[in-house]
Image (tube, rainbow, N blue to C red; front, side, top):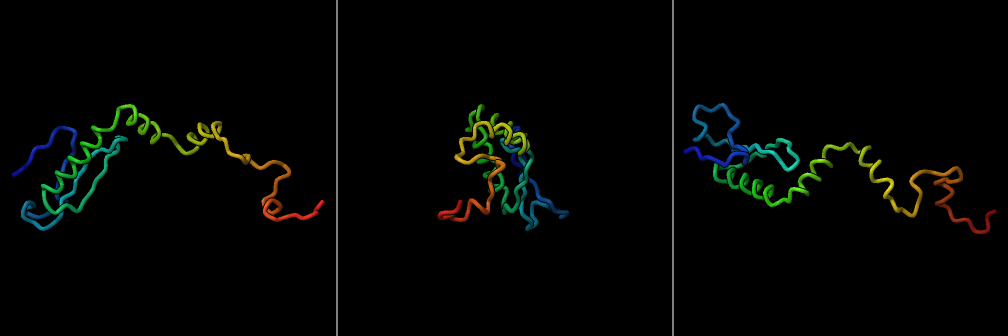
Length: 117
């Protein structure tokens, strides 16, 4: 009995070459798109019902996510680390400077100097 899912929920299948895949002992695999739009697969579901239940959980989670949050995640997922660092760095309120100054030394800053000139 093939079960129909809503459009966009994903799909489930068995990745085996058995003549009768519905009767074989191999696990089901699901394929879906996450919130960032990337296609993913999860495997190891013993029954169709388990696979469909997981697809419904993923679909409900995607529907619960606010559109603005989903868009922000999508944009952030497409940025490289260097682009994100350039955007984040001006907001940095770190007590230490992000780059080394001419007189800074890691070895010197880690030693305690008592009465040193």
